[in-house]
Figure 1 (cartoon, rainbow, N blue to C red):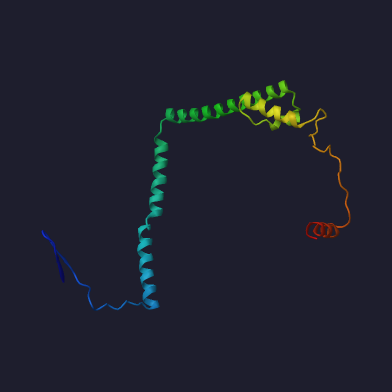
Figure 2 (spheres, rainbow, N blue to C red):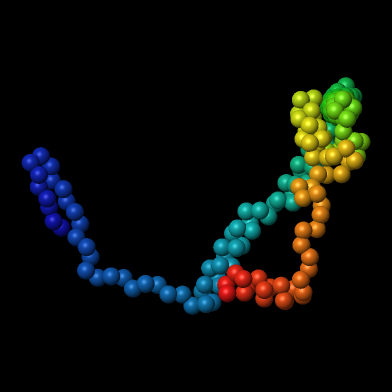
Length: 168
């Protein structure tokens, strides 16, 4: 061992051992036995899972059976209230969309494009829809829908011409 002395303290550090122990090697059968043992221990932890699951289900059944009629009725009423609120909201949104469609004059076929939930949002969407359609109900096409080019040969010929123009 070596000692390092400071003015007030002495620190002792162990020296490295000169002989190293050889590394342990295992045969395949020893390794298989180790893995099998480890798996058995792990499976043992969860061996009673099915029994606990049954007990939990039985507990839930008993807890449900012990509820009073008032508790059951209260739960049903709460579920129905949630459903009713959802229906009221859906109806309110439908009324808003119909009103906006009527006021802005969007065609009935385009009314399904309104997805907003407020009158302002639906009005903005309606304005956008109206800006895209012409009085005859068809979308506006920038070039008027006219064919501006004609087919000039097979695809192979067109590609060859394009390649010659681009690289040639």
